[in-house]
Image (cartoon, rainbow, N blue to C red):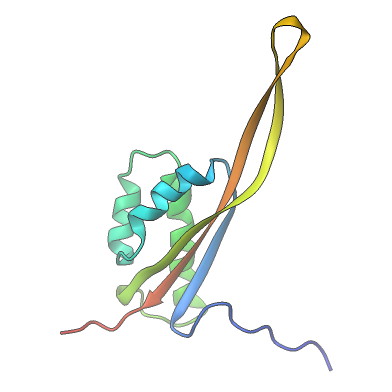
Length: 126
């Protein structure tokens, strides 16, 4: 009997990768995700390689994982891949405390976020 096969979360001709528990705020991560939306993957990799943002190296790893998923799991041509979607979500928040004057406490929040990158195969229009 067994279980039924899960349906694909992305359309045919597309592949996805997720990066979870990335140690930055979603707002800062979204700035990097905006850089690569709609770009061909080779340009997006070059953009992330030379970006001055600290978190761009983590985004580059997720993009490389999406490219590898497209090539190995879905048999897509990596030369014709484009970053179709790159969206960011919240994840957990570490709460820390800092001693303040008169016995009070200051709350420090250290947010984590996650990024999802979807690459899609596009036919070259001549």
